[in-house]
Image (tube, rainbow, N blue to C red; front, side, top):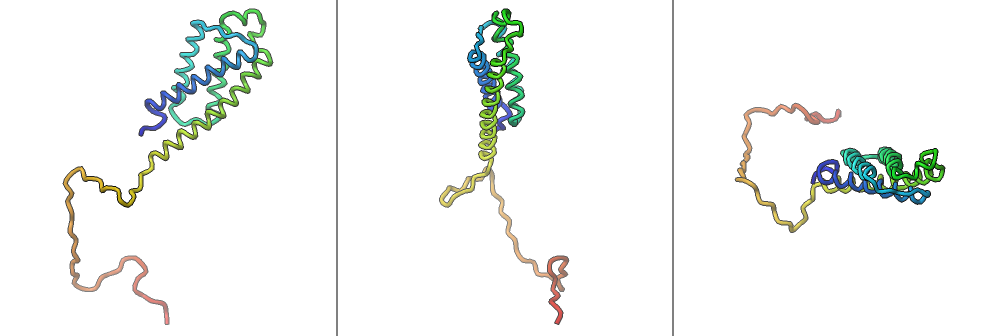
Length: 174
């Protein structure tokens, strides 16, 4: 099993992070009174977010690392979501207090959930790497090649054996 930071596992983890960021951003935007316009800019923003999330999935991320990615995506996607025109009417580019609070609360909650899932994925991967202890009754695995056995026999020595280590032969004083 490869590391969750490589190959298909990395792609899956990054894609899940991107989908969660995108969905959460849109829901938080609408809950706070905004309107989401699906435009080419929004699609480009989603593609850029996906690339960023897959790049960030190269290693195990902490809550702080995940929160940084999610908050950065919230700012970018807020700008892309309003690119269809509702920001034109507001002087603050849609940055109302309820909009900022909605994005911030959603980012913290989702980041906590993703950090827990991240710990779970990496813990399962580390458990999968543990060697399996054979049980009684398991068949003996077949050898891949010829097994060459060695026979050992005691060789008689001539003279006393010198002990170079260990407790030695001297006893306690009498």
